[in-house]
Length: 91
Image (cartoon, rainbow, N blue to C red; front, top):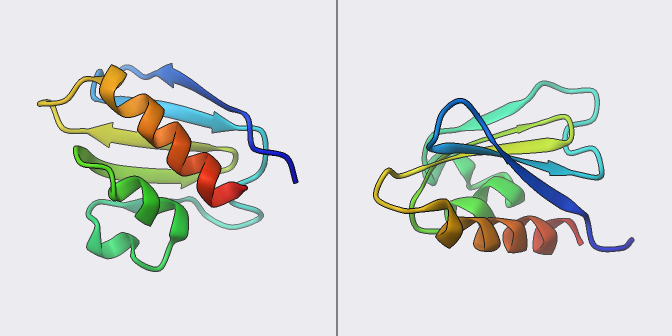
């Protein structure tokens, strides 16, 4: 399967961003929310994103991931790392 295409867009919350992927992440099930690294251990995608310093929460639904970051970091620091984590897990 080719590498996933990931696009990012802002949300009304300046500390949250939506990463849309060109494939289903949740098929026929409910979305998954994680509010700390410990709760994400059983989910490879959430765990990979939480491995990035500054990530505070992860929501995985349909074909997107919403990531909330710490106010102390800027998106230009985090977006490339989050995109890389998504692509590595889904490739």
